[in-house]
Length: 249
Image (cartoon, rainbow, N blue to C red; front, side, top):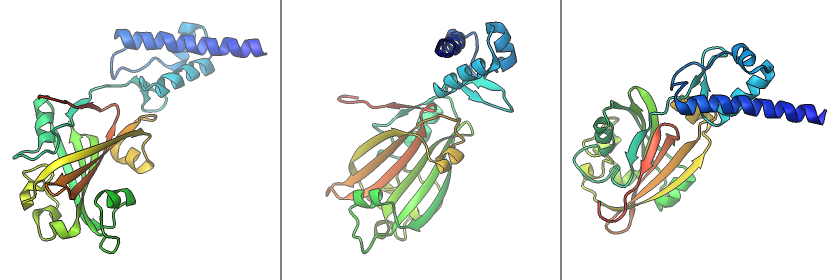
């Protein structure tokens, strides 16, 4: 029995290796349908259960995704090259949108604005008084070629942005909005974690099963070292390539 189980494991790994090689060599192209379980079973002389295990392994590895019914496809990998070191820096244009256009792609976004009690980790980074803890949050979904690529929620102390353009649900000429209200951000701190998405993130970003996300928390500080803004970005790992530059740019 143990020998049969070991043989079955070896067989599904062989099938997975064969398909993985076909994908790597370009014989199965991005977006192309994977042959059916029945056809793969005949090609490799194995059972459908063995084929299903092989396809499950490739799904876990992120090489293939599910589609209509039982059809599976080679995952399309077309990441946005996102230069984080100058993203949302002070300036006269949205650096994120400009970068998307530069890469020959089409940016878009939706914006919702509200006044909320922030998550604890945001309140801590904004150093808010527990008795005056309301913030203005600008929730954005950023699209590339009509596909959601990022969720970006920016939190501002309510008293800082009260009565300004930042409470309006529309895009501003400056990426973080601080310049629009006369504030200057002198530095920022990024915290990056890689994790699996929540159910809400899965739905909003329309993620394929097994897709991890990067959670990027950026805290922006003024010249007096006082925190002005916290932006929490959730970016699917298969749609974003993060770039930092250090030293002379």
